[in-house]
Length: 580
Image 1 (tube, helix red, strand yellow):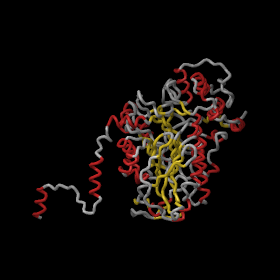
Image 2: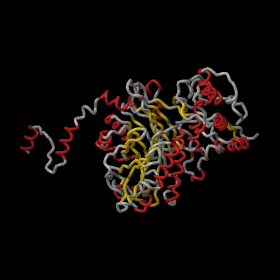
Image 3: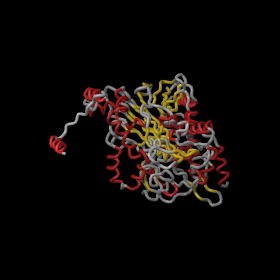
Image 4: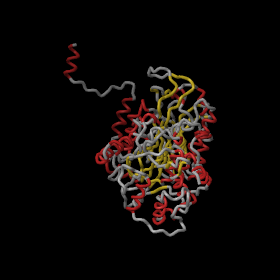
């Protein structure tokens, strides 16, 4: 059978619905050992054939050491020694396991042979730099030519074969970057995190990460080992997929309060000169694919980026973009979020450009919180509006009027600090004083303006206020039809600059996850025990020692028209000034 026939057979086969899989079977250690062995089946066996370990077959279980050797062999890692720890050791936590039939299809896809040349096309899952020249990663394509769904695997046969790689850790492989081909990358890498892992020796890397990323319960934040088939699907659909786990100390009087959140960052799909309805619909369909993966992975709270269902056109000052505004109760994006919430039993935070139909069609930058049953819990309007560089947002909307609301959901108490509000410490503080356990920060910010601040602000807010912070940023470069000017003297131009993604989560103990990609769409999963919030408050006592009354009096004086700064002048300096 030739390569094209094999691909057709694989593409036409039916995938098992992960949601309907017997999860008790999937989670059994015996089946996992069989799955691991099945995934590493002999590469000489007929491509696409039934894996040697079917659920009806009785098979001897390989040892952990043997499985690690097979894992290293499967990834063709020339740099890592055979026998190094693979992605599925007994201690690993694997999330999102598919059925055995889906495993066989993914395994077959990984070993597709290209037609006449008989070249191996191994679709190795990687969180590191990869070759953008392959059709899988061509970001310039129109939606109709983007990577097809999982059942259509034909394009996998065209993936290039990589020679050599370096071990990133956790079974994930990092390939040498091709800097000249990676628009939006950071020195050829998807993120600063991966750049550090590539260049810093392993012995020193642990200390570098301890200082930059902090420790959660004695170590850097652990990775959630998401099933490799889902990573492959994410690569196929061109988005970054990462998962991490924050833990807390066991308590005698309180059970763990484990919550799983998901953050989605994405670029626009169609050019900004396409019809507005088509632009929005393309974004909705793109986000739906990623959000469905979040649902399959058991996410409880899903947050989207600022103004997620439209281009971030607020740099242009052109009023035609106000057409994207919608009602916070009945808008198209809100209905979409309600559908996701009902389908996957999760809370959805949907930041939109709101049109207040009751009050004269005034526009607001608003985040709507949709409950897990599709009900609207409430909304928050952006407190701080930027007037810096290209960010001329006050052309469209002004500062919000909703204060600092915290929304108590079935999964915990959450708040939303929209974009520019992250630069204001008191904004974070008020969400904390109102009881927030997780504060989401949906944003749209570009590299030249704020990237050096990005990794600091959310982490600092989490430390100072004793809550988790989830920072989400859009990704890509959005080019508009007409030139516009900015407030910093630049020549007229058509784009903001590059939205650098890099979404991450920070914990109250100062630890944080690595970032999502700087240039790709992405889904970041973070599992967290909310008990950590109170444990850190008890340890550090920041709230107990905050002296809010002192600052309340100082701020009250500052707000009066006759305010005088509490300034003590050096007497010698005063004398010198008198002589002058």
